[in-house]
Image (cartoon, one colour):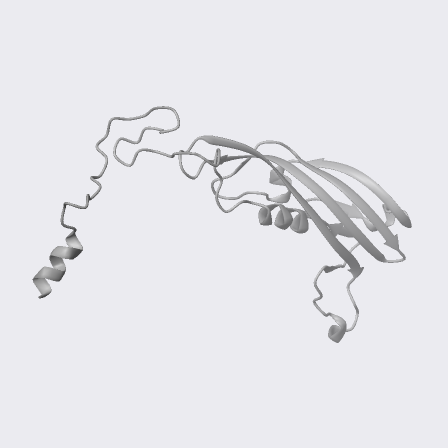
Length: 172
């Protein structure tokens, strides 16, 4: 958990540099290894009971290339901005607004927001390079390292009759 005690946050602006293990904020995702501590730079602004938080986070990560399965190291970086206010006493005031979180006790917990912002930065597809050739579909060798001698599918020439042309003849 990444918690800050409300009473220990001074009125006005302040900054903090924090570091935590990925497990402490439950940072996990299938196919990704988080290999360093999560570094967090917090900019806080407290006004009476409301706390505005801007968190700039980064973590070193390890992925597999989507084509050749080689290891790819990448730094994930995310920015989170959220406002924390005390939980309203009257139920109808409990409006879920984007960017506003409520606290009940004397602590605010940043774990969920930090984790979510980093997970949103995960790329859909990771490639070791833009021109990655991937794996040979027949022998499985990494084509970036070795050129294999596997048979390539034949390319139809103009003098050969295509399968679709044969189907048209059968239909007639």
